Length: 209
Image (cartoon, rainbow, N blue to C red; front, side, top):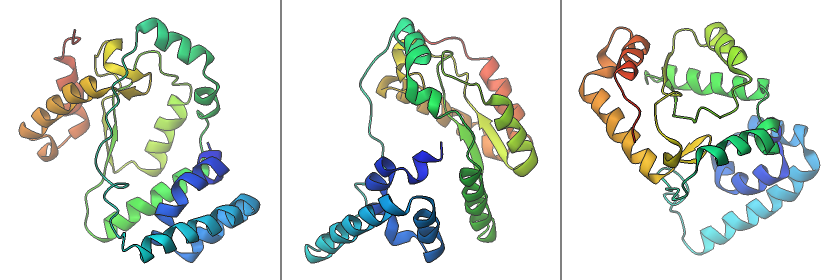
């Protein structure tokens, strides 16, 4: 999982867009973890951002926010095979202490500015690999016990509403978004126990055909 933070592929993809918002401590962290690839990427990142300045391209809307819909549909058999044979899924199920540390920093940043924080887990197919579930819940209790987890992991959607085992496709996202909006209209964020409210609402949902 750490490779998703400082591996070359992710650095090259994200650093040009995120470096402007990073402080020296963050950049030194990446340099320490992967100095060779960081030096390669920071030079191309600087060049890309310099070209954006020269062309007065200051818009970040195309990279931040919004939603890129996934049109692919899956069958249950395809998702089962994906879970069994996809090495990327198996390699990404570890817990990264560095990820947890930076998540804590984001929570602290929001808290200092009186911004409410909620953890949300979006729907995943029943074949999605969940081998770190106990670790995940232990971290939640140990480090983030005062933050509500709105857990929609088991939202009952059939395979055809998934692009892959961990992501809804456009149709699935529309169905879930409309349902979630209904929860907000019912006063989800004003509930004393938001987690219990979500659980009760999920119990009333029949599997969507």
